[in-house]
Image: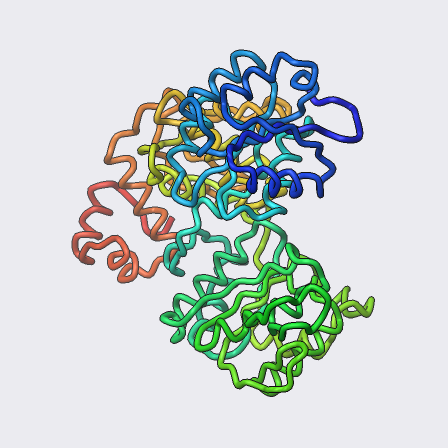
Length: 477
């Protein structure tokens, strides 16, 4: 049980003194007091002490000496079932993380450690409100970039945004992407770069929400040694690092006004001048900016420059929240499960229509990122390779226990959310029925353009019409 003291306590399990100090200093920023254990055996021994009984969470590095990570997690769970535990893994340590979570770990973060990500993870695992584990920062764990044709969504507002993004990718102009957290702004930004003539160039990302406002300018433009207190070395800015490629400026609304002015100057001149420097350097870079807040309101309040907004918005679109495109939940869930199934230690994962109906009924305040996180947790904790509504108890509880469905097509507010693959008992439907649904879905998606339907399905027009006749599908329906 999480204690009620103002200062929470976390046990850091790590053998490296430098890493111990780094983690202790990091968690202290979030109001955490730390207890150190150099190995897993010491960590388990501390659980029974007065200090150990006061713990609110455990943070363990996968390289900590002692027992296997999954074994350590299982043993800790045996003694303290309710104590939250976060595992720190290497960048390629997804398999370790999957094993740890199946043994009972609450979450994992990857190296190099982003301070805000770690503090968010610790805060979430000790939170007692809302469905647990649904807002974990999983985007870093499934980060493979997607091409536009791989981005899932068929609702009109989403397809409109996708069309603008695809057209903007071929141009050289700056792009502004708006949308609530978790709607997929970074996915779109990376797809724009990947589809652009700059795809072979560098792609640099700056998250302005994760940097102190006073350091954002230095990060973007660089600084000379001694330019300000703490500038012990010369640092090249991210704009120069992205020369010839693209830079994603995430949370552009967090940039202070002074740095906004320098960014306007750069957009007008194409030249970068380091802070504390006198030399101007020409840089060829395309800016893709994202914002989670309505910039028009910030402009009215005097917190964002109108000239910067217009300079960044040569191409602009807003990504709808997942609650605004409920019909995409089913296809998205299947797509995300396919990606999760490709991770080390995972396998093919299906999902029943009962589960899809339940997921589509939820509001998803964390949008696609939240859906991805919930699916990941369900996949690693499930004892079978097909997820059912029983694997989403927290979502069901939030909805008040609803979510039943029939074996027919799942729909929310009249919107079909995909092709039904499974019966409620977890068994697959007959192939002929699935094929008929796929063809109906394609006809609707491509608005009856039969040549396009045939091409996308990889069959000839004559074959398509023969199947329509055999399956009894009326194209006018």
